[in-house]
Length: 392
Image 1 (spheres, rainbow, N blue to C red):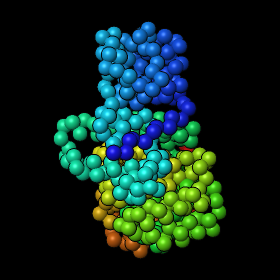
Image 2: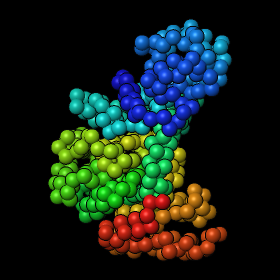
Image 3: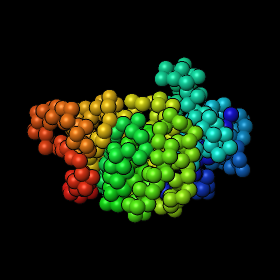
Image 4: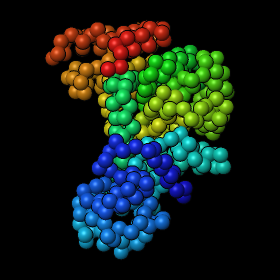
């Protein structure tokens, strides 16, 4: 069974009550106290630190590995709380940061799609009850998703503090859209332009339109010709159901065109997928990946973050569900003010959904918000609508 991917900790201290790296732990050990702090997801069984003389009253150790049960018991006796890692699982129960594409794809070069980390976790998810796991597995999944919540908060709060909540734009659309199609190219160009204007692109992390938007952001430092060449290469394996070829093409594009030194937020952006849809190959172009077991939490999180507006490219039942799930937030101002709702592809969206949304939003408790709804065929117009209000 492949081990859970090693978590790479970015240097930061935006969460002073949380210890998420060995370097950060050593600073607190030198000060002589961990009292009231949370130590998350650390391997304390490797080069074990001396915790015996450190104040630990009220400290929480969650998802850590210890050199012995005696060490754990001593911490509890001295007033700490210990929630150990479930070591027999193929995924970490307390990840302290978000996933990267390389972590989800680990194992693919030698074992193909069936042996990559993302697929191994999905098989485990299915074999342990899927969306209705037994209690032990359910607890492990909730712990994992709580860790992803924490990592996502760290990553996005730093971005929003600098750029403002309106700098986060969500892109929704169909997972079955083939690579190289007109809709795929439109979404990729959209992601490219949004990233170049300093927007953090957020998607649901699946294939199709979602992959296209993250791809555009991933290649935002390149010219449009490069993006077109990358799409042409991806289009040699257009359908996600051809798992191995589809994933291999994505890895080839990353190796040929990608910049691994670029800032993740505007070179790939964020994706928030779920193992509920683990039969879909991982979208490997997002800069950071907040992958959840819970689909409900994941859907709400995407819409909560996208205060700068939402783009709905061609999509069917799932996309329409997201339209009205987002509309509920806008109607009641659940998460504050909303950015525009931009429907990209006027022909596709001549199905009445935008008009129904306008009708709904015309009578909100805060007044007529139907002006938030726009339909366009032009990427430039979509970007203008999403950026003309600034990033504050």
